[in-house]
Length: 480
Image (tube, rainbow, N blue to C red; front, side, top):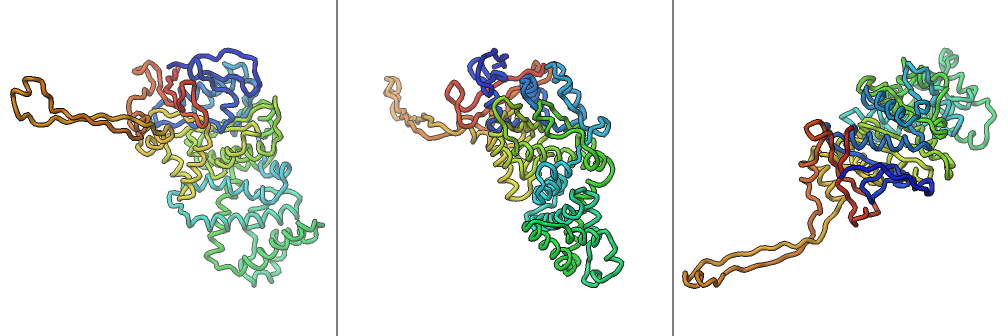
């Protein structure tokens, strides 16, 4: 079946139709906000050029929309510029890259919007997750080091915030680098004149609330007692992890883009603008991952703080090759964002793409939770059995009847000629998969001129059946 353009109707704002799956099955803004859309298909299945493009066009055509687009490939920018041009919204697309002149001081923004030490710490550590996701050796044991790195960052943020009134990544790096490594160093006159000690004095002298007094006492004990007596290997391992994150913050293009001025922020999205982070990791490597992760997490946190009301712009986070950008916060965001008019659209190749990024058993649960929260799942041609089994399981089983029979050996040729059959029939019923795994692995068209620029997919909807009574549809998308 081919997608038909939705007919304009007068409805509640959330019931506005973005497009139709079939003549009788609509996809509305309310459907989009119900956890967003997960699009899955092997490389070359046509997910980006067919269902992805159609969904993107439909959302942009909905004028009361804003959001964040994370570029995965160098040609993504031109595709999205074309989509906005078609919708007559060229002025609503803001490009964020080194050449655009756009800047976003992320820690200063978080300080102004939230102000809490815990929130600033979470920003830094969550961004760091994206950088660590490429570490193939990561295991559950890495959780200990992650927590210790988070504790170091938290205690540094608490002191720097009290001492300076704000939080800048260069100050954090300089403060941590100058920490005493031994009880003897604490007595050194040279160390007492250094930046670290100076900030400790300023924070001590600062007028503080009772809560700030308590938190600073904890931080002071960490820097002046616990850290100097910590085993060298343990301390250096924690510090190395923290410096790995702050180094990216404080050097080169990232420092210029994310640690200087601010002339664009997530607030622009809530006014109906779209921001595309045009720094695909295939071209920019860890720098692109870092900037994209920063934008995604801050957009999520800011949207959850938004008091969204009827008529406000919906907020969409769009991630192609989503396995590059996914982190532990995504599943939690999807579980909460609907009431804040937020959602995500994420495209990837398989379950394994997420499992490889979110390491360990807890990572698998986070990936499963992420996909479970998607209200609609669009399955193109798949390339592995496990993802196909998962997709078949989402559709479920039905009670099916099976017939069989057997023929007894012929004992008398005259009885056979007389038509006296020795056939015995039997019937059985049991539950079987409605769609077998093979349906997702073979037979779905993957676009290109050989297939008339048509890509097949199976759409699965959670919680509510389609008009025909089942929870899935077989749909054809055009790449034109």
